Length: 225
Image (cartoon, rainbow, N blue to C red; front, side, top):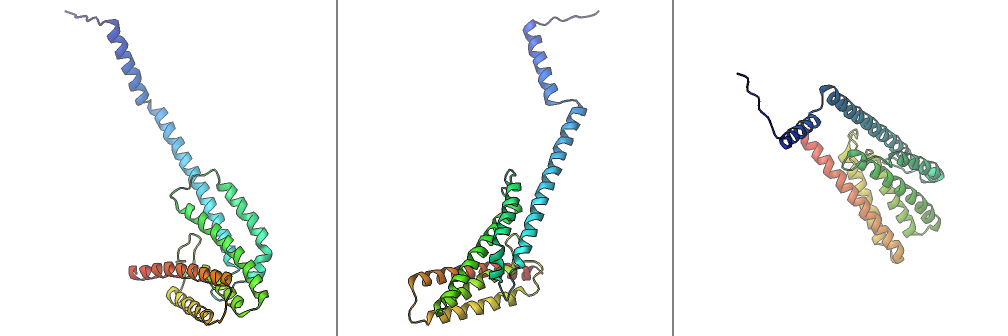
């Protein structure tokens, strides 16, 4: 015997809604597959853009380091090129403006490269100014500013110790001895204007903080090998 069951229209409506919802939650395989392809394509596109920005900043930082080494900072030459590199930096930042780099290595790279450029630009102007004053205090200040910029030769474009640095501990120790020497000479001057004292002390703190950071990384790398 065939049994036929009749459902109230309200129940049928509920069942129909549930089926429709299930269809939405579980789209046909072809649609789901297309959505996955779109997501993967977007991820690849985003990674390509990130890679391009990283490459641009690595190029930019390499060029900045072309003006400085552990032994010298070509401040006059860099000063003549500030406008060129400022324009290049603006172009790269413009490309990165609409991209989300939060909590990524690229964010640190952008921050450090930008910071390095403005530190070098400031230093180039300050060295020229204090060299022209030609007082003992101003010359020592220019030396300390120069030293601070030369420490950037130990970095990579992310602000870390360059992994290809051959003798990082020796290099950091050389910088430390030079800093101590300039600081001792400055402390023995009979009279120094307050502004010059402030600028010198500020530059010593920045250089020391950078060296401490690099030394910590160098020691950690040594322990891990």
